[in-house]
Length: 182
Image 1 (cartoon, rainbow, N blue to C red):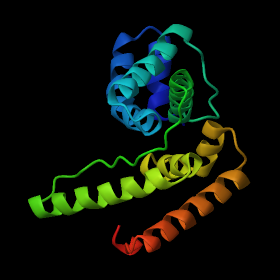
Image 2 (cartoon, rainbow, N blue to C red):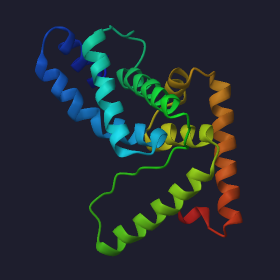
Image 3 (tube, rainbow, N blue to C red):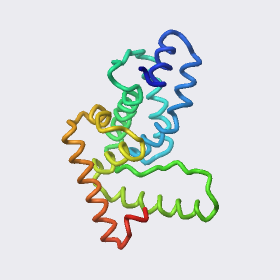
């Protein structure tokens, strides 16, 4: 069974311009958040998102059905983000971006504070640790999908996830923050 993105992309390849608009609506915000984790600049992140869709429009490449469309899309975005970083001659760690739900004012304030603390702690991690946590926990990719995005084996991904979580937990403890509250 094809995922929603794959169906939309196939419709686009068949000439349905509305399908492209639906893909942009479906994935643009998540791609901007993902790219922002690399480049730490909203304008660059938005440009990366636009470039990602431009690649889809220009190359019109068929992707393998064995892969999820979202994985294919995020791989393009990751490569574009790396290109931007190379051009800037710097590499920055990922930050966490969480979508806020409708909450009471107090709950919203507490959530923002937790997000700020988590974001600060993620920025202190090695870029590869922050990246793996972003992909798995915030963007919802499976280990198999992360393997394809990062071009790593499952064992490497599991090891990175384990080390990243352990390092994050240790950083919380050093700062006197209870990681159970985050």
